[in-house]
Length: 296
Length: 296
Image (cartoon, rainbow over all chains, first blue to last red; front, side):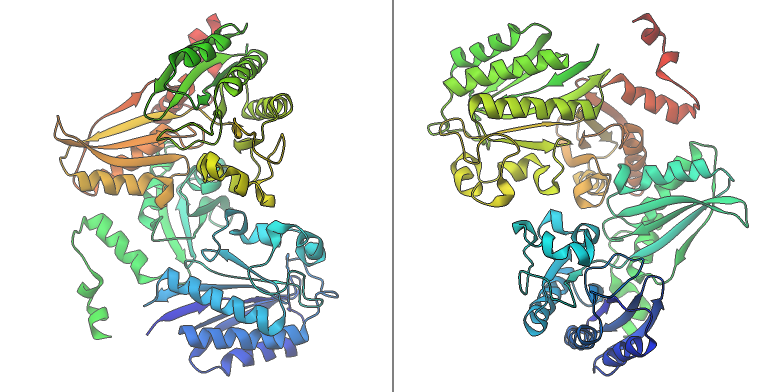
């Protein structure tokens, strides 16, 4: 069975009854599990994490939109986090037994249904968008709800689905597909923050590094050591082992070694199997050689 | 004195008198040197390489446009290479004593003059373009001269300078600023082409590697060895030493060592100095510590 993860972000983080009602809408949908949800009152925003098959995830997403559009009014919404609509952003993430093109197709099917059923403009993003100017969430969200009507007057901001003007109270929504994020940190045997910052600059895409890496340098004050903290946004195309090897080599340039590295939260097993293949120089290895996969 | 390199590409590679007349127009301009030019009859295209200060390069470029627009008619032009106009593309490259923002300003000044003086639509590209959909030459040129009028009817293809429709005979032109290209090859101690191809896939941007690397794997048939052949499009942000170190580590995963690496053609000295700093772990080093720089 295919497993898709979805992490809808909703512009409500202060009214517990609304937050709970949205969680119930997801929980009541057959074929999905709500893994987690959390709210931030100063952001005035909640994030739900659910998994399920394509049909279940689609139904749960539409149920969430129905409740959110009825309960949330962006005209009176205040919060620190940038936002464009009541349901601000919905990514679909392939976890197992499903390809990225299938998740893109799911994003488009959900987007078409949301546009039609709720009269909401829908912008596709990340892998679901073919337009390079409309791939990044930050670019789509720039101007926020307050600037949306003016922004949508330009031809290049015609939505992918739904009406060409914002919904009066619910704004617009951003729907797409992306790979799972891996939060990956490497701790350095140094108290020099400048070394961590220079290594981060070497490895991150924005300053010339690897395509699917975001990185920054930090101090872990309690341990007195510096850390390169990263988000890996596509572990298939930019594997963890390559990130580790470059950081190790760049650190050596400053006479610094690596103390340890850590994966924060969940990681797909495929990302670890790739590292095993790399370090043991394994050829002709397939997932069907893994015992657990044969037991499923 | 500032040194800027420019490499205009012109849609004429068959008529020696026209090709020569364009070269003379550049040579006759004070403050510039024509380093080289070459023509390809099957592409029906010529490439000129010139250097000079900002004012000289600007004057030479306008002189080149004047001759090319008068002599070249895209309605009857045939050739294998994609093209949009009589002067197809003009990049400005910072070599010494000039910054990228200054080269961007030069590209815009030349673009404005070309648009006004010759009635040619001008599209800015690479560093001179702020629009991600209009940075790559291939994206701008898609559809070629024959599809240009239809393409320019869309609002997103309004030119940066000049009229909103193609010039009847000279089409349109693409002007911008970019870093110098470095052609860099690494030869592997193996006859396995698949290893070179896999390393190329690991290092190149399009498949998840370093941002400013294009790469492919080849066989050097006469030596019976495989080669990773690369173009480095920004040696400041993606330095040669980092490319070399990653290729070395990826090759080791296949039990393969590096025989040698080669730089094809010219390279800015700054790219080699960066490697010296990396491998000798030199701190606090400045260009004024280089003897030759003090003698200038």
